[in-house]
Amino acid sequence: MLIGLVGVCVFALTLPVSKLAVEVFNPAFVSFGRALIAGIAGLGYILITKSPIPSWTILRRIFLIIIGIVICFPYLMTLAMANGSSSHGGIILGFMPLLTTVFGVVRHKERPSKGFWFASLLGTGLVLTYALIQGSGSFSYMDFLLMTATIFSALGYAEGAELSRFMSPKLVISWAVVIALPINAAVTYITFQPNYLEAPSMYWQSLLFLGLFSMYIGFFFWYEGLSLGGISRVSQVQLTQPFITLICANILLSEKLEAINFIFAALVVFSVFLGKQMLVKRVEQTKQ
Image (cartoon, rainbow, N blue to C red):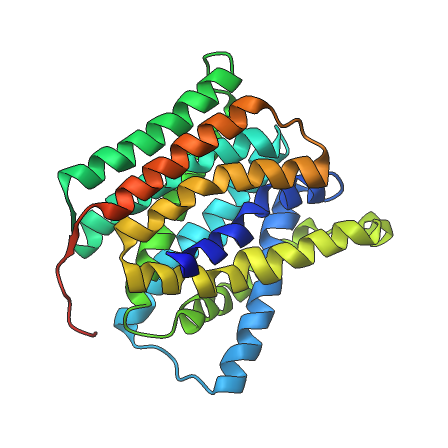
């Protein structure tokens, strides 16, 4: 749980930092550019460790990770940041733990108890209630972008976590970003504009953070936590991410932080604690 929480703290900065980056760069350049940076870092790691090319069975799983968290989630999330606040976006991403659990159940034969489902639905319900209160009872175009993004992200989280049971989490994310390098390099080149070179250094630093931490190093901790503690249980730590994001958005972007944020934070953290106590059965699988 604690290892997974480290990853969540890294990911919590993603929305505010992405919001800062799209003030100057277009969403496609930010999302594919950050993946390009991660890919370069991943290539360096693979060369240093002399990691062999994975088997076709593993590569098929890695392709799902690429679709989920290297391409679709970053682009949809960054596009959403160009249309709204990172604080609001952070709350909508509260869907992710429940969807990660669903993928864990369907694809990897985890068997959460009824009590666990109750705790998971309670936490997600709290997040949705908060979003509706903040949105005056309705969802926006930004909300739908983020909801779609969470589906792809949950797929990538669950697939990467299961694969991390059989190989190093560092290699899982490294191979994902390296295999996607040609696509990310091409789109980054196409969407680059000469005036970006004149952008203040903090915007380039934001892009560098997104590439090295949000797209790469954060997954070292996240995948390892999920693989050690189980997808269903450890994914519940991510219910705290919206509220960590709120605090980060307030510090970095001066987005307003209200008392209702702390009330819902306490309730959601309680649901995480409740879910941690519930039994989750896993059907063991043999190494591929």
